[in-house]
Length: 204
Image (cartoon, rainbow, N blue to C red; front, side, top):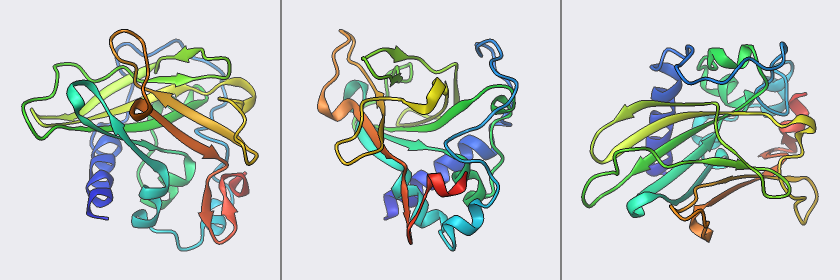
């Protein structure tokens, strides 16, 4: 649980201290109406009840391996994330449909490689989509936090159908040769169940 509390602090730093403004390298503006996830803000507080940040972060975070065998935690930030944490969503999502994530990278021996790992949203059929914004919000030789913003695919069919129904949202961190091993695949079964019978779709 301590690890998820630390991740929560990194996430807060990524969204709360970065200014959430535009960045160099951002993609061209997309659709004029924006949504961050599968649900709009209306009614979401009732849907998630008394869900706390401590409850939420483990549900949204996946762990894996990055360059130089660094540890990676990827936290998905849908609309309910901002409602529970009280953090302001990035300004970019006001101009285009966006999927937001926080990458927290840690290494215990030696230093992190100079650049953050390349992270891709993997679509159905295997197409890999890079983030339109990757903003480093905190960095030292052993820790790095990056805010990742991806274009939300049309129709919300992000990856292959999950075995139990719903969809699988998948991010991958390829090796230099483009291959992806099990520890470099990060998946979320959608809709996410926040407990008490509520899920993302209840926020729509």
